Image 1: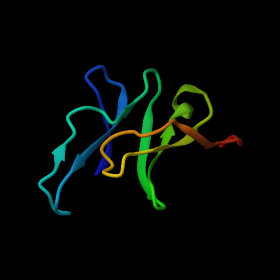
Image 2 (image 1 turned 30 degrees about the vertical axis):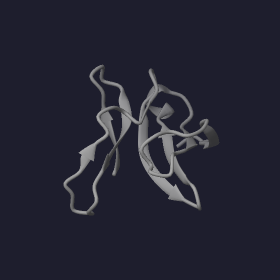
Image 3 (image 1 turned 180 degrees about the horizontal axis):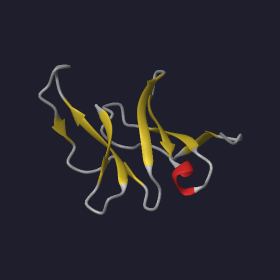
Length: 95
């Protein structure tokens, strides 16, 4: 399960917890999977296409900036990052 939560400093981070069964119990990794200082991370999603990726949104609109979506490759077990952040797209129109 990938989720968004605040760390001890109040920054939004993406965390991960695992279980052998869909109903749990889940064991958290114990540290953020992904965190970026001064940026809010929202909407963690897993995408499978023979490889494991995390798709996430950097919430720029909360700070008067564009909102951007990125992908980053994960290890096959999904517990660690395994690549560079790849920019996907950003919003281009005002709401």
